[in-house]
Image (cartoon, rainbow, N blue to C red):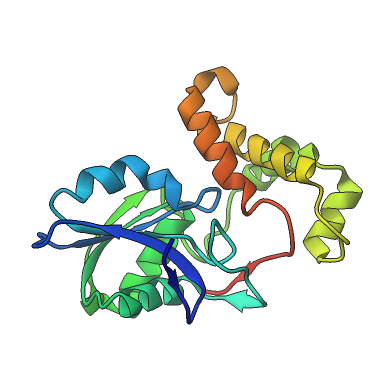
Length: 207
């Protein structure tokens, strides 16, 4: 997969010789660029389509210290010589697309936001409570604390898989629904993409 060297970001692009315009797909926090497989194929018939992995996700490089994801998005556009594009973002990917539009409005032809987050938004107390109950308990508390602090000697692959599957049940199937709510294709693609960023050193973001 191609890599933008300055920021160690993995990406893919496709499209016809004379595209109608450019679309950049920004994935959700519990996924990587593979979440856009169907949209990537469908849109590339008429448009130049770019999808990429955030730093710390998928095949992109890991995060050292703080990272500003909307600046990375604009850096991807710069590296690929995209002057202006429609940005499509899901969940926190939508927040980063919105922040890019606010920082550089002339670079954004349009926004398509799917269940978008918003930088600085204070979540209702029920949201972190659900995360603690449904996701964080999938890994023993002592090991989870070491992963978050970055002091673990190594990361147990079983912990990564357990948390990835818990994230998939909570945020893809949805609260109150089980594994049976997802097709095998959705389950395998979402759980495997979540594995790449669920555990390990902490990854901080700044707006």
